Image (cartoon, rainbow, N blue to C red; front, top):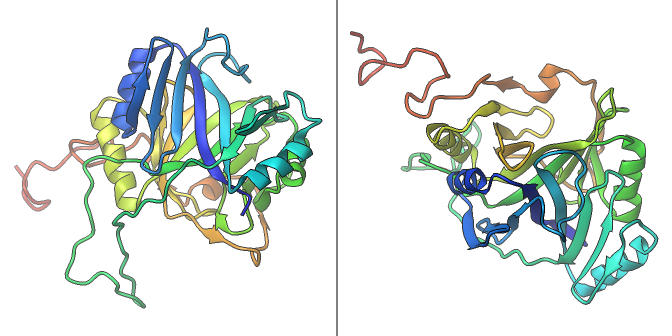
Amino acid sequence: MDIMGIDGITYGADDFEKCKAFFKDWGLQLESESDSKLEYSTLNGCRVNVVKIATADLPPPIEEGPTLREVVWGVSSNQVLERLGEKLADVPGFRKDVQSVACIDPIGISLRFQVTQKRDVELDCAQMNTWAHQPRKNAPSPVYERAQPIEVGHVVFFVKDLQATEEFYVQRLGFVPSDRYPGRGVFLRCDEQGGHHDLFLLQTPDAKVGLNHVAFTVRDIHEVFGGGMHIDRCGWETQLGPGRHPISSAYFWYFKNPAGGLIEYYADEDHLDAEWTPREFEPGPTRFAEWAVDGGLDGTTRRQKNAQGPDGKFLTDRK
């Protein structure tokens, strides 16, 4: 495996107080803080930076307002870094130093590659009992009061030229297509063996360019629910969810992010290898979500937003 996943991201934003409150509620660890930068980490050491838009060395934006400015991809060795340097030497924005290689992709987003700084983590995760297998015995599934994201799992961008952008990631960087909306979108993973996608590229009819969302991996479906309800209790707005993607099989919950775009908790995505054959899908609501709650769940009543909550200790208790 050469490119191992996302090692870090950098947002450009201005409302630091709002961003600081949001990412604390989101479950990230604040590592450092200054007047121009907030630096966070996930459980496995993936970095999330929020930098003031006016900062001189902040990478250029792909759209107006708060948005993602840089994606850092972790690689397995210095040898891989050297090979990437050779492949990217003629790409706009190319830079190379002892520790990293950088360039600008066809979207306009700044990319940087470094030997991964993420660490392995061992976590207790829920086991699911099915008709065929019952691995969880004499133990209930967990209930989470909030989430602690493990890593940044994938990013999603709107692109102007889907074909050119896909060719860049596949031919220059070795990404592998997982599934497609022909002419409209492609799911890409870093390596033949791995999660369903590390990057999703989406071309809209008006060919806009920008950030759609950043997704954070959590342990299991129960942490998607628990984390989402905590975020709701903190007063942040759901965009869609919870729900389940039929294409990647992942459970999701999307929120509006003051640092730019949307932000997602997700878990239980498909894992693929070299034997997988990419599928093609016609875009549509049922392709995006097998099921989804519009407006989210109320973190206090644990019911759908604006729905009447129970008024007794049990569902059968009625006033």
